[in-house]
Length: 233
Image (cartoon, rainbow, N blue to C red; front, side):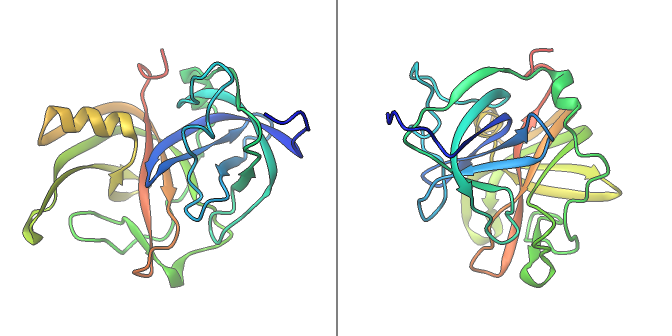
């Protein structure tokens, strides 16, 4: 690693460490002003690799870790205004771990989940057409839910796609949602259990609005599911 210093270092609580093609999508909130922060790489897909999120002891950053991340510059991209380019010459540093009470204090109160009314088949209110994307509205939300239902089953059986995936349904702000899940731990746990519905009570979820897809929509994803048990409460 370089002996030079990074341009700046951000200390965050990791609120998402979700699955992404060729890596992870990491996001969190700054410890100071509680603003959103998404570290990105300089790769075309902006994914964070296993090496990017490695600590000096060889372990890798995990959900709910308090992390110091060396950075080069802010790199907003469309509605993903939270993006910051990491300095990959340096290891990340773990400074602690957030508790359930810490996470509760970071919840976005009365947050909207972007424009509603557009649904891909099998889902509900899960995408935003390009014309309705507010580029000043940000792309990350941390919300508190009384219950979330995880659905494990084939992706699109009516179209012959039987590959199993996990979706999450919940009610928030008077609207019903059913979104794809990219939290790797809950995704794996549900797929191991097999086709079915799995109910969780008292949940804090990080919901992300992904980059604009080639079909002209940005898709909403459940990037993390945090329960009191997962937070060690």
